[in-house]
Image (cartoon, rainbow, N blue to C red; front, side, top):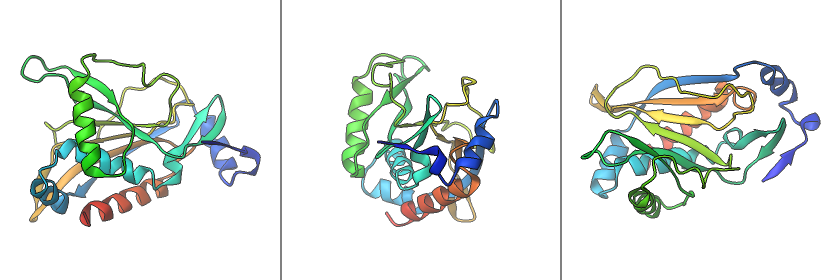
Length: 210
């Protein structure tokens, strides 16, 4: 992690412009093609959810703007970010979810096994001990019951909130492809549309070539 000198930062004007907004968050939704990804996880007996969490976080780490954070009106750049995701607690007993935070691992198989084990062991719905003081995260959720065209997230009205929020819905078939509704929400003081475009392009390329 390192601090960015705002006065010498190329985003200085853009940061100052959007940081003065009461609500600098914005959201972009798009369909991504998961046809190859779907075949890959079935062949390798991977969990769709944990493999997707890994893929989305892996690519977020490749886009520098996704690793900037606003901390007490200063800018920091993390070396690595990790996922904090929702997971169903015990769908056979109730319909409540929990927040699970894990450290990112490079290997998709190692990560999927680790994330599933961590989730199964966690009994608390909201275990914030691992999140206190951390902003080296990306928040991830899934709504597998709905093929949405738009989604919004609950958020505290804090213009320094700069943790990206990534979500996806129910995949569907169209023109011999398997498509996934996918959403990215970010703080505009740090991330512009071009950066979300780069993120979605790199994510698509990554899952196409697994």
